[in-house]
Length: 119
Ligand SMILES: [Cu+2]
Image (cartoon, rainbow, N blue to C red; front, side, top):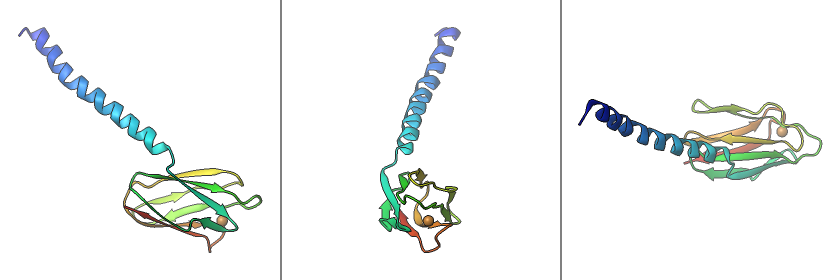
């Protein structure tokens, strides 16, 4: 084996799996960006109020109240999130990267609560 060929061979050994890993990673990222579940904010409540999902899955929260702002947040040692103000009709995606039990609360309406069980 010439040195030139050996270099190419070694590089190919690296490039092919790296490219494959990159494409798989890219697919996973795109997959994560697509929400799997829809949650409605209506009448100052989350609907449904509880949901069970898998790690890495995404909820889409839709403000279905015509004239109310909402503001979803999660404050947990494992994972925190803050949507900012959610205008009527707006959609907010939350991807849960770790397993656990999380309360999604509303900063504007303290009684609003969504329990997310991430497995
Ligand atoms: Cu609210």
